[in-house]
Length: 514
Image (cartoon, rainbow, N blue to C red; front, top):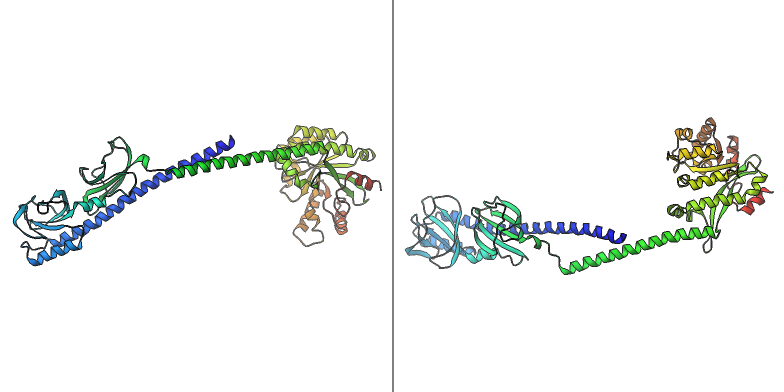
């Protein structure tokens, strides 16, 4: 269910974004098509306009030179089929075929400047449909160019643009199509004409469909605009193969995520089950790192550590299973079992040495558990010198632990900071929290006799502890020189391989009975 919901959410968002992107891309493509066709038409109209500007100087007598020139212009421009001259009374007196006798009656020239159009018409001379571009000369005569009807229709061919409803060259004032391919319709609630340069329109059209249309005026002849429209539901058309691939990808993602989640659950369950089984089979056991008095060389206490005697992989250190136990919550069961086992293991030693110090490593998760706190309070009845070691980085920044520490302090349990100096605790922490003991990190001990950055820090830590009346234990003592220096500075309780490695219970008893 989680995999299905996750995949459905992700694929829904992806589908929505893909649809929006494809739709906007389709609109941009339609606009590109319009602009390209407009550009092609405008180029041809510009050529015609340049021809008309030059043709205003043609002789009205249709002399051989003028005829040659007109025929050459027609030959060089495939968009032109004829050039003609009309007198102020509306009679076609001359064209690129020659002088007309008698002249052909047409419309009288308009008394306006600039390029204009009319048509399409059926020419009297050729009796073929044509589109006319014209200019009126200063003397009242009109020079015009006939453009074949099929030429403009070919430019508006939309067969290459799938699912396009229509393409129309329309009068920019009335919206009446001059040339049309497809089924022409106009938006219901939006006024398009006169069109201003370029414009995109989307909405309900008068044929009942929702369309997206793009309209652009012809720059060289603003009286005309090109409009191309497409049904809104056809802007994005997904081929069946893409739908199939999308469905396959969805199913594969759903199946893959389900597989991963199931395996993750199995792994979590497997890890938790293995640890609980290890506890039940007594595969987890304690080892004891001795605390040694440097003066008498006697063992005065131990730090309790955990190991796993795995049936297949042998003895495993805490790094192999404690992080996983912290994630799945079994660290609480492990820690409670560790305290209970330590009470049983050390009972004889505690009878012989009532002040024997026993130290447990504790993290913030354990301090937040009433079960574990009750276990520590119960252990205090058997271990008079009970100590818990906290890491300053993980615990001292959690203000909610202060109440718990004060409760343990009142019960007579000693509070120690492990790896002191490697975190970020300052005087305010040492003064505000009930800290009794500082364990000097082995990195500072290793700097003894060396010119390193840690060397002055070690001296500062010892001085600070003395001023704050805090007891000190040195970790990681490996050489006699280190032991001698620490002893000269008043640090007499040592822990390290110079004396002992972590010992199992029989070894510990043996060393203490020497």
